[in-house]
Length: 117
Length: 111
Image (cartoon, rainbow over all chains, first blue to last red; front, side, top):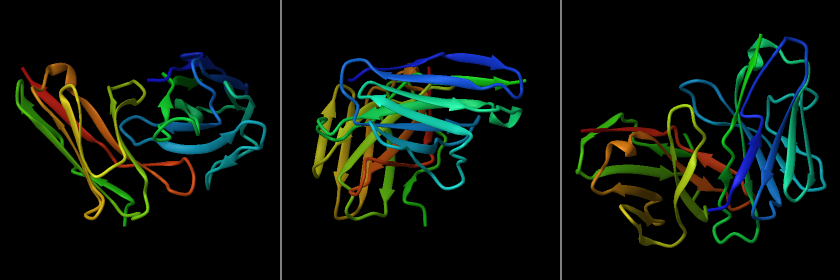
């Protein structure tokens, strides 16, 4: 299957700082990328949908000013958690898809574990 | 009513047995259906995609789709301890590329 990378895999930061997470599709052009958050023992929660060259679409209840998403190219999307607080500690996972894939499959990155102290 | 429902589990099977996972969905115009495997602390990994009614086999995995009954299943044959994970059923919206996920079924394969 297609390969999606994320960086960093793990980050620990102090409350009030901003953290940027990168998501890259390595072997295909991702027309659409998604950002999810997952708390322990819970289901994936979709945060936003990102299309290359346009503004991200956020799910209800997700603060767009806090979670800044940029999809600058067909292989890169970034999520910036601004002014992070301990309640933002979670597992952040991106996925990518392309209209060229036969089933519009989503391929997931390995995830970024964020801990805010 | 939830959009995608899975048998809640957990499901415990002996090594070498068949694990059977079920999923129903509510959106009749859904186009594509997926099974993801998620190990504890890891991200989901796509293991099966199915688009047409019937069976699709890939190694020890067989996915079955019945659009009339709005039902999709996954069979894992010759279950191995390494198959112990949470299995997520996902359905692709006909409108956009978003996936609707079931809550997941946790499978434990006993050695």
